[in-house]
Length: 261
Image (cartoon, rainbow, N blue to C red; front, side, top):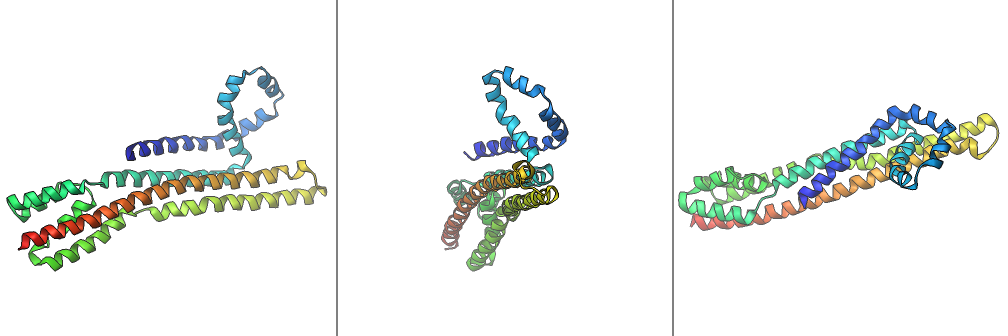
């Protein structure tokens, strides 16, 4: 399931990354919007083609209408947030370990070849649990209390590595709607400036500013919701790994106590 989710994340990143190309197409699309031949094309296009191309064109059009000055930072926040999320998902997926199998291998290797054989098993196993085991077993000659303290201390180090870059993801979650709200304020200011210049309140005068205000807010909230889903999924994986680390550490201490007798 984790691998499938990681693949889906990469596809999502690629899809939304394409929207950055829309900035370079702003002038051409605006020119097409004023062309009188657009009406004829729409009338002669089949419903199937309209249905297939409508969403993609609408996404690009709304992106441009929202003003690239404000939409581009929101798009960058989405791309960077997704990139960090994908990196964390892949890292955490590779950090998972079958703790029961590892504990059994450590116990059997210890019985067959001593503490060095048990440490070799931990050295050849990837993941934070195996690293914690190795650090604890390497202090075995100093006593059980030292082993326990070493496991607890290195467990905190491994937890910090698991939570790496989460602060940046949370920053983009908070920054995306903030950029959207900033675009909203700027758009409303532009609308009132046009009213002041024209000296008349009409829908055509304020429509542009209000459209920018609404679109930037909508896109900012959408980006924040997407990144929030990834953030919560990452926290769920970390929570599971942390529980495995704690349970496995207790089981390792049982093995150490048993072997020390």
